[in-house]
Length: 243
Image 1 (cartoon, helix red, strand yellow):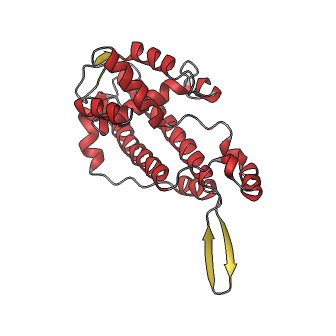
Image 2 (cartoon, rainbow, N blue to C red; image 1 turned 90 degrees about the vertical axis):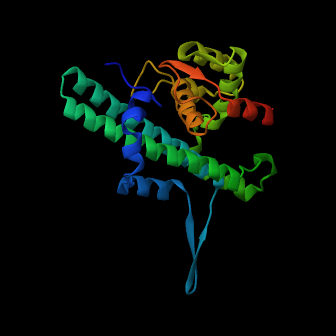
Image 3 (tube, rainbow, N blue to C red; image 1 turned 60 degrees about the vertical axis):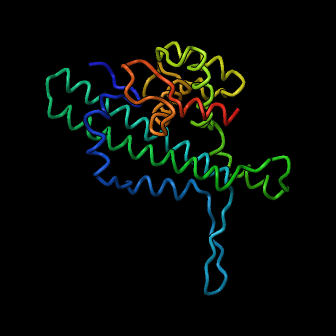
């Protein structure tokens, strides 16, 4: 059994309905991470304590870091399922697939929150910031360094490639064209290999997760043959509306 890729129909065909009905609780580690990454400080004002947002850019970075950590966990769980299937331990393989489906559903919710945050708090222009805000960004730079290209930046390149190819394409060929489309967008960190898969660069993994979100949003077809990406009418409309 081959490694299961992000958005794999194999996971969702059998387990998406189960995952949708099972609440997914974030771990204490996740909650602590988000709390720390948000970069918020508390100011005591007598009886009331006011929460002051330190920097919206840090929240974006926190989302991207957390998304990648969850994606790594999903990849690990898929590998466990693959090995169990090869060993004919079908109960263990099923358990791993169910866990991967739940983690994927949780990851999709977080990705949706990330996009909602972008709408609520657009990232400020650094050139227009005052000295105090700029210094605050420097102090919180640990989260900003290595920030990968956000998932929604892949949407238009993927749709453009598919439209140019007549509406569909083999995943490997589509990804190579997407990389060319995004030459001026992708950052150095996007070309670094994943810790969980040294042969897979970060941008390629991100593009595959973007495809998963685009299927959920109706921009790409969900019932395509394995290894094929197909645009929908909604995807074509999105491409025109965002031109």
